[in-house]
Length: 150
Image 1 (cartoon, helix red, strand yellow):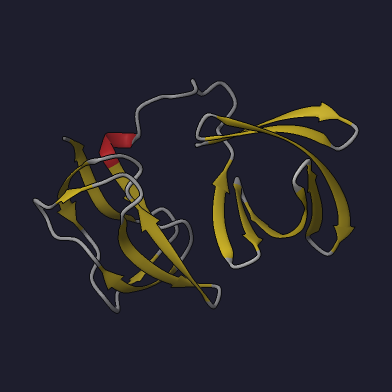
Image 2 (cartoon, helix red, strand yellow):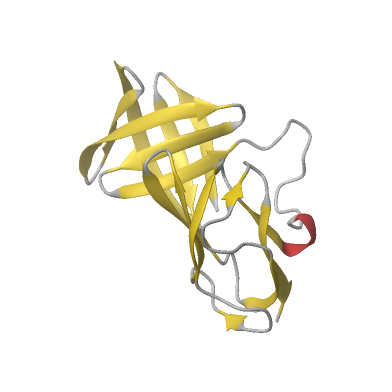
């Protein structure tokens, strides 16, 4: 989980899986930001679609979704479902119903915007249902995998 708190003047405090990182963001234009941390700097390429932000840091791709106003932090995921971050084509399904998975394990690969996006398990658990199959076109928000707590 990533939480970002604005500190003003382009300064932010990012909390990534409980680790705090102070950073400064400088707008380079055309959807690019220069991120400076005490460890050094890097360029982030971004694109927006509604509440979602697609971010590329070097070779890593992320999809970030803003929480709706008033939503409680740390709430339960909607019945354990894992959804497509955007419209695309399922290229690989790497799990089956009933399979135990660990946190971060790749479950489904989706090709969208000429990039491969891996849908990973947000926590350890068991796959309740797989709703995706290779070659299937899916819309943004389409349920791909349903998990239950271990």
